Image (cartoon, rainbow, N blue to C red; front, top):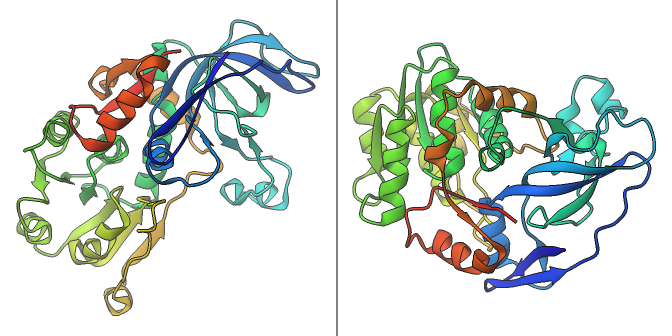
Length: 340
C-alpha cells in the first residue's frame, strides 16, 4: 500500500508498506479521504531529520476487525481520530479528559495512506456525509474547541484572526454559538488564495473582512468595535498574537491555536495589558480529540457548505504539487483532500 511521509524542504516520500493485520481491539481501515492540515505543511516545510507521517484528517471504511469486543463491523464508515483519551486515567475519571496523557494514537502511521491499522477507541462512526466532506470532521472539531474556549457571549462581538480552514470554520461556528457580529482578519485579496479564503469567510457568515496586509488590522477592528471585541480567536501564526491584545475589550477573551514549527513560535507580549485589562488568554490544543460527535452532527445537518471548503482533491502523484501550491498561495485552495 502507499503511505506518505515528508521532511524539509518539501521532500515528499511515498512508501510502499504492507498493512498490518489487526490484533486485539484493532481494526484495519481503508482510507477514503484525508485532508491536508497546516501541520502537514509545517512538517514538509520545516521539519529536519526524520521523515514525518502526513495526514490526520481521516475518513475511512473498516475492512477487517481484529479480536476482542469491538463494537464495529466490516463496512462501517468511520472517522479516525489522531489521538483519543484513554477513559480510565485519573484525569479522564475526574471529568478532565482533555488533560489525558495516557492516550491512544496512530502509532506513527500517516493518514495519507491507503490503509491503516488502529485501535477502535480512535473511531467515530458516521453516515450521511460524502467521504471528502467527512475529512472535515477533525479540523472542524479543532475550530469548535477554539470557539468554546473563546467564551463568546450571546450576541457578542468576535474577531477571527486567520483565514485558513480553521479560521473559516471558526467564523461559521462562532455564529452558531450566538455571536452577533464576526470580523475575519486575513492577509489580502491580491493573491489567489487570500481572495478565495476571504470570499469564503463572507459566505460562511463573516459580517466583514479585514485585509491585514493592506490596512492596520487593529485600527480596522477598533472602527467596528470601538471598545474591542468580546472574543478574539487567533488561528493565524504566533507573530499575530500580540496584536490580538489590542483587539479585545477589557475583560475579554483571546483563544489562540496558531503554531509554528520553524523556529518562529516565540513572541513578546505585554503582560501589563493582560493584567490591567483583565484579559483571559487561553491556549487551545485539541489533543486528545474532542467534540468529534458534535462536528459530525453539524456536517450531517447540511447547513455548513462543505463543498465550499473542500475545493481541491488529489492523488498521491499530485501530493507534492498540492503541498507547494498550498504553501505558496499560488492557487485558490481552501482545503485540499487526498483521495487515495
